[in-house]
Length: 370
Image (tube, rainbow, N blue to C red; front, top):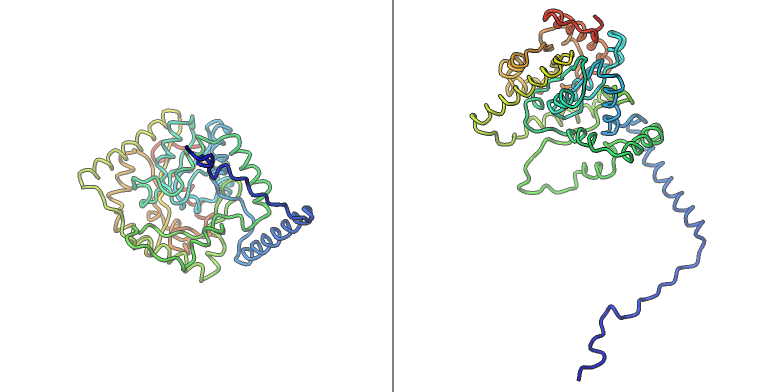
């Protein structure tokens, strides 16, 4: 005969009771809030001592809000797609003063601009001037790049995403200098030298530290610390050197690479034709670089095999900085981006050369103030 206790299980055991300690819950809440505010104040004070100031967060939400201007401005004006060089180097307000148009800045740091050119061509009715920044390491790369996900997030954003961005933009960003991806707690922890290196880990491009500040129009310029703090400047340069010396991933066989490049050129040419069919146009821009960065680019991406082929296949105008002395006469502190003080002058000179290039093709553009 089975014992009556044989079916007993742990689930049948009485649950232990734990009494709630006596105390003042309002006082506990108050102490918690005070500790939080003290910690936040200390964190904020530290980062303000490290040159950080409240500024617009160059987030995917801000990118999406800027992208909405294409429809709001009825497909006219200037759209800029590219990587960090056209983001830093083109001063939006200098452009507005020179040509009467505030560009829609859609460039994203560390990101391949080709999917964004395709987006403008195929998913909008834009009929103005598209300025495409060409940084060879990114433009001629099959990978989408660091922030390509911004485009997918734009397509999939919800009302909650838009409300969250508005709260961030209007409530948090104007107040907190520490509200920056570069100062995020886990980012700072990951940056510390105490973590052991894992054997067999494939090296990747090192983390790029904060280099810029932006406003709500996505007008972006070099952060003053890069220009004025020699130690921080050396950090930025050392990052580039480490990245440039990192072995690249294995390349496809030459025949396959040639097919990939041909398909890439054809895609770009097709996007240019689509925009022109609506009455718009496209111009390519190669912004300055110097030092080890420039040496690497000339070695790995010769102009005759990249830039020249691009313009020929796309049948488009292009401005290459080495062709114009006034586009070279700029300060480039960390070898890849123009200083904030020289960006307005560079922008005005760039617009002048764009006007000449488009006139030479018989296609002057009103967006250039002509």
